[in-house]
Length: 227
View 1: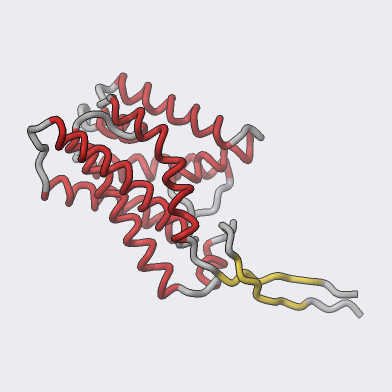
View 2: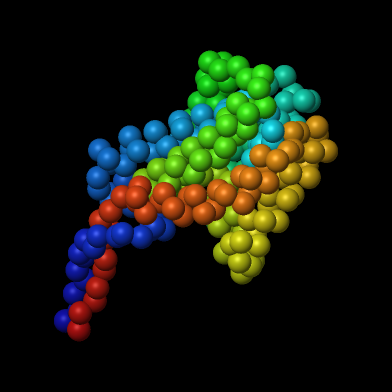
């Protein structure tokens, strides 16, 4: 007789889980606070690059262009675009998680709060330090929120969804997406500069550096069918 058994296997790699499985994977006392801290720091990193005023991350070039035409703050533009991007998940059949919705809300709110607290420095050296600090902090924040294993952010999900549906490499899909949003952002009057190039070159290696330190082991149910 064939029986179905379920065992829990620890995962030291990023798991592709649905929203319910993410919650059942355990260690929420570690994962939920880590998710929130990571997303708040992500918003802080965005604000530091804005105050540095020597170039923004590709998606933030688009956000900065939007606020030239809409009566909203930069953080509100981040939130608005997050939900617009989530609509694009529907035909791609991507599954959102708690982290997906939290990302859509917390990053923009944190960015606005940080922009309210700090002003743009006058000295070029200080502005460059703000930009570099923002890029570094973004790498740490990415490792934290991704490592919590509670769902992709809206923009990351768009990238992985297009990768899965088109069969193109993640690197190519990400590059094309970021080139597209930069071009749209520039058309709208967004801010492009040296910081954009630094971010594009550094964020991948930085995230790869910090993610192993932040990746939380979770328990994934494994089903086996013994004969």
